[in-house]
Image 1 (cartoon, helix red, strand yellow):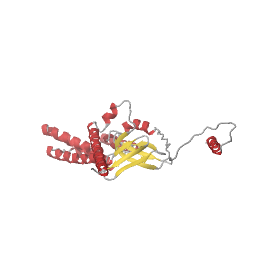
Image 2: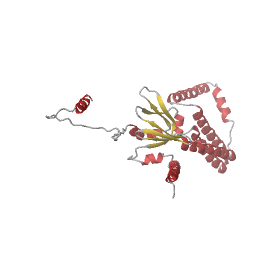
Image 3: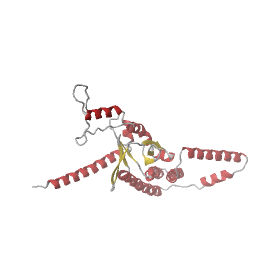
Image 4: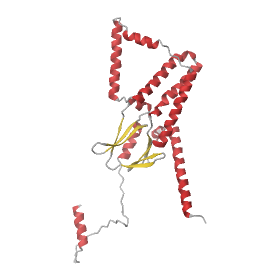
Length: 294
C-alpha cells in the first residue's frame, strides 16, 4: 500500500512544478504580445479583478541600441555609402540610453536642458552673423571626424546588447512580477518566496521621474504606495506601460472587498428584543444597548 503522506508530497511537488510552468508560459505570452501592451489595448470590458505588471532593470532599455545595431549592420552591408549616416544614428541611440541609465531627467530638467540648447543655438547664430565662429568651429570639428560604422562591429555590439537585454527579461520574470488586486499586492521573487502587501490604509500613485525611461519603456514609471502621512511604504521602479495601465489600476485600487467572518469559533449573534409580559433578559438588554450605541 502507498503511503498517503508520500502521495501528498508528490502531489504538492507536481502542483509547484505546474505553477512554475504556467508562470513561464504566461511570461512568454507576455513577451509575444508586446509585453502585455497589445492585450491591454485589446480589452474593452475588464472582467478580471487583478492586473499583472512587471518592473524591469535599466538593462531592459538596451533594446534600442540592440535594434539600431542590427538594422544599421544590415543597411551598411547592402549600402556602403550609408556608413557615416548609420554611425551617427548608432552614436545618438547609445548616447540616449547612456543618459537614461546615468541620469534622471524629469519634466523640469528637460525644460531647462531645452532652454539651454535653444539659447546656445541662438547665441551661435548671433555670433556667426558677426563673423565670430566660436561654436561653428566646434560643430565643424565634430562633423569633420566622419565616423563610419562597420558591419562586423555593429553586429558584435548588437549581440552584446541582446545578451544583456535577455538577462533583463529573465530578471523581470524572476523578481519583477507584480500582481495587483483589490485586497493587496503580491510579489514573487525567485529563490526567496512570495510577499503580499495589504492595501489597508495605503494610497497609490504613479510618478514619472525620468522622461527618457518613460519613452524607452512606453509609459514606464514608478508605482508608489503611501500611508496617510505621505510616507512611502513601497516603490516599484521602471514598471512597464504604467501610463497605459493606470486607468485599469485606478479602478482596481478603488474597489473594496468586504469579508464577513461568521465562523463557529467567534459567531455573530443578532437578537430581536420584543416588548412583552415576560421577564426581561439581561443579556438581551445589554445587546440592545450595545446596538443603540453603535
